[in-house]
Image (cartoon, rainbow, N blue to C red; front, side, top):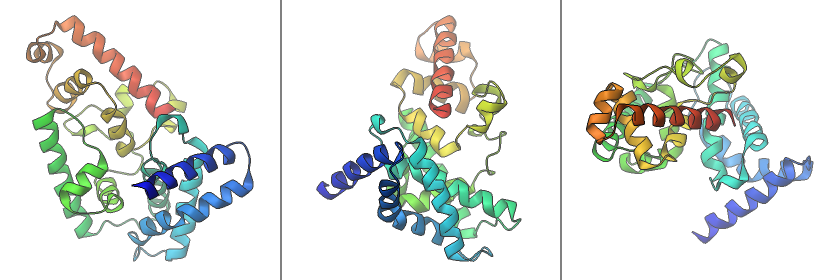
Length: 244
């Protein structure tokens, strides 16, 4: 635990310096987190691209994470960086026309999604990716790759909660610039996990179970007007989270 806290503190200090233009700090971050990028890149081997090339592409995602990471939020840098690193590699493979999801990752993705659905149903909350990974006996990196493989790359038709949910483009994005800055479903799930319990229950009932506002209100003992107001706050919160 102490070692993890030391790494967290060191990353935070270096990120703050790198964001101010300190090139030595940026180089040190690459050195410290190179293993994370490599561990993710290895999971995309045998896709027609050399592993060292995948690592370099993954580094682009890590640099983007450094530039956009908010040190005030208390989130571990690795948690924030993983989706960006995966996204960068998958975009490269997609653009090269060689993206291919292995059967093992598809199977793991389905297992993770079932566990996610169970937690949503039983506890009314969105589980963190590390929690899903632990429950399924895999690393967070493997879980992230498997979950990411379940959805199209940067698709604006991605649903907030799978096929039964609302589309990202119909809820969060206000204009083309906002759309371009939307994160993938993993980041969205992390944003949902930050919500207060009432908001998570509303999201579960409205966008996962497809209940109307009135049905949701009846389940929660609220008025339809109250649900409508809270839903607007939820979408404003998600918009802010995903854009910032």
